[in-house]
Amino acid sequence: MNSRIGSDAVAATMPAVAVDAFGGPDALVLRDVPRPAPGPGEVRVKVRRAGVNYIDVYMRNGTYARSHTYPTPLPMILGMEGAGAVDAVGEGAGAWRPGTRVAWCLSRGAYAGFAIVPAWKLVAVPDAIADDVACALMLQGSTAHYLTHSAYPLAAGHTCLVHAGAGGVGQLLIQLAKARGAVVITTVGSDDKATIATGLGADHVIRYRDVDFAPVVRELTQGRGVDVVYDSVGRDTLARSLEVLRRRGLCVLFGASSGAVESIAPLALAEAGSVFFTRPHLADYMADAAEIRARAADLFAAIAAGRLRVAIDRTLPLARAAVAHRAIEARETRGKLLLAVD
Image 1 (cartoon, one colour):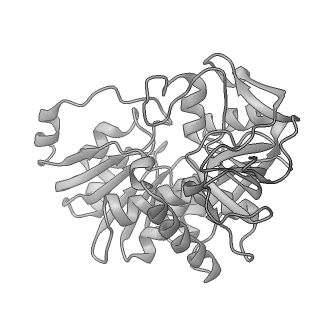
Image 2 (cartoon, helix red, strand yellow; image 1 turned 180 degrees about the horizontal axis):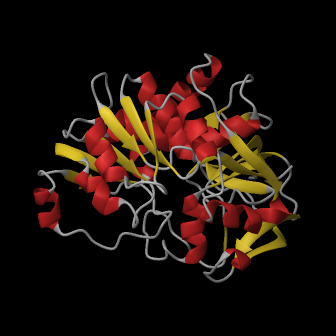
Image 3 (cartoon, one colour; image 1 turned 45 degrees about the horizontal axis):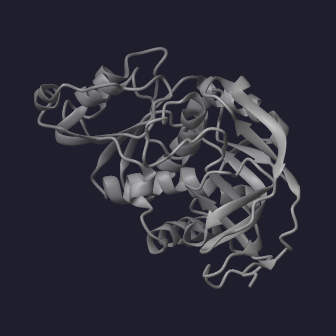
C-alpha cells in the first residue's frame, strides 16, 4: 500500500546544492537530483526558503566530519533550516496535511526544491508569520532562545556579554536578553553594526576592532564581571571571555566564526574564578517535539506582539549559495541570510 498522500511519488528531479568533498564555498555544486519520497514518520516539504547558518559552513568544510550529532556523509545536500509547505506525508507521520505551512531546523537538506523532514521536527507556521521570518527563527531564533532561557536562564539583575551583536543570532540574543530584564553588553566590528545593536536595546556596545573588550567589560561591571558570556566567535575571543566572567560565571561557546577552539586547560577555569564552560549543540536543547514547538511558539508570539524583530540581511537565489557562504564567513552580514528556493 502506498502510504504517501499529497503529490504523487512518480520519479522526478529537483535542484539541490550538493557537497561531494569537504572544502571552501567552491565545494558547493548546484545540480538536479532525484526528488526524494518520504518514508515512515517523514514529511516531504516543498521548500520556499532555506536558512544559511554557520552549521552549514562547518558541514561543508569538514569541521563536523566526526560529529555524531550532525552527521555529514558525502555526498550530501546542505541546509539545516527551512520553511515551506507540506507536499507529501509518509506513513505514521501524524496529522500533517499537504499544503500546511511549516518550518523546521536540524534536519539536513533544505538547499533543495524539496526536503525530507522527520515529522516531529516540524512546526506549523501561523498565517501572520512570513516564510522569511519563520525560516530565520527556526535555527537562529531557537539558538537565541535556548541560550537565554535554558543554558543560562537570564533574569532581572543579570549582566550578559553577547559577542557579534549585529549578526543573526546576536540581534535576537540582545532582544531576548533585554526582554528577560538583563543588562546587555555586546561587541561589534563597525559603527553601523554598533548602531544596529544599540537600536535593538543593547546597554553598552564595544567596537572590538578599536579596543580590547576585556578591560572595558571589567570597567562597565565595576570589576565584578558578567554573569554569562555568549560567545559565537571562538578562537579570537574565548580566553578573554573567560577573563570577564564573575566568580562562578558561565561561558557558553556556541560557534567559531574566527576558528575552532581546540582545547581549554581545566586550571584556566579555576584561575578565572572557578567559572563554568560549556560548548552545547542546539540539538540537545531541541530534544523532542514538545521542546521544539514550545520554543517556536514563544518566538512566534513575540513576533506577533511586536516584541521581537528579525532582520533579513539578504535573500539570494539557490544558485548563489556559495556567495552566501562567503558573506557569512567574511562576517559581512547584518542579520539573516536566506536562499529563495521557490
